[in-house]
Image 1 (cartoon, rainbow, N blue to C red):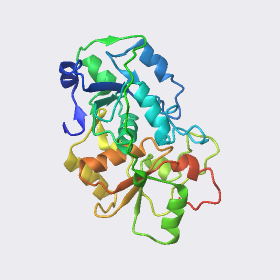
Image 2 (cartoon, rainbow, N blue to C red; image 1 turned 45 degrees about the horizontal axis):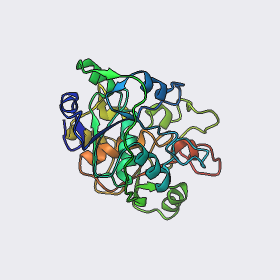
Image 3 (cartoon, helix red, strand yellow; image 1 turned 30 degrees about the vertical axis):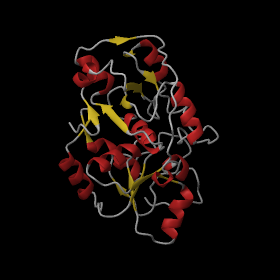
Length: 279
């Protein structure tokens, strides 16, 4: 375990009542799921945790799902949850590492200074024999002083500019190989099949084992085996900006800090017949 990024259930249990520790459940459904994770949080969650809804603490003016919120929206929501940028923020999901990295990336982009992900998520917490609770949990409001990093998120216009001007930036797609290669349909209806021209494919699941990140050496080798030059800038994408953050965190773990996320990802690119694609 890399303590710069992760905590164990044992560590969290020992620090559960620390004043500087806040816990958030950032579980979110996959595109093929219709699970109400806020309801599941109400029914069972780690003691003292808040629910961070990635689909509601988002840019709701966009028709695309869970787009990064404006700084003011983020600040208002997390301040009301009792979170400041000074807290040690422990993020968990249901245990598959699907959405916790997206919340990690969101908090990081808005200036949180200490963020960790709970290894194994809620599932790992329960397997370790630690207690859960149910019902609402409220915290005293805090002030989260945002410090937004706009260079960490890119738009389709920036992607087109990179393609048109042949800039030295690599695109990495976190979707499955079948979707990347246009051999399997997209889970969201109405989207084209294929990928952004010139993209490399590193399926998000390849970086994980039993809901945990593999070792830095293994992660580095996976990127290199897929033809990724780790000396160059990188932009990650996926189906809707969720698992692209799994790659961002993986790159951060191996020391590659020059990486941004295409927030619209294939939900936007695949819906626009005017945008170029490869199969």
